[in-house]
Image 1 (cartoon, rainbow, N blue to C red):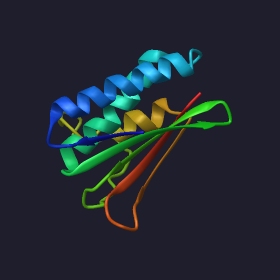
Image 2 (image 1 turned 180 degrees about the vertical axis):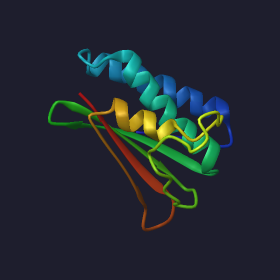
Image 3 (image 1 turned 30 degrees about the vertical axis):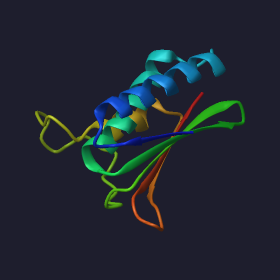
Length: 121
């Protein structure tokens, strides 16, 4: 488990790199570029939309890696869809994660914030 302050980019980058390294070591069968993109998108969402503490956990889900990312943001859950404006600079991260992961969900946490789970095979 890793925690980071979403207002400190260096902490978020440190966590991203540590998670990617552990995924590569513990799950050598996972497409590493896909794992990197999924982890980067989920952590970036915390940095951009949820000031406060972020947390990343890895779990083994029947031999697959389950990446849990929790934040202390508003708990607003944006759709995992392409933005209406195809030229938009943002708004497609969750769409990318949902399409790269073998399973993806995001829900509001009872104590505030959001909890995203992406499962990689």
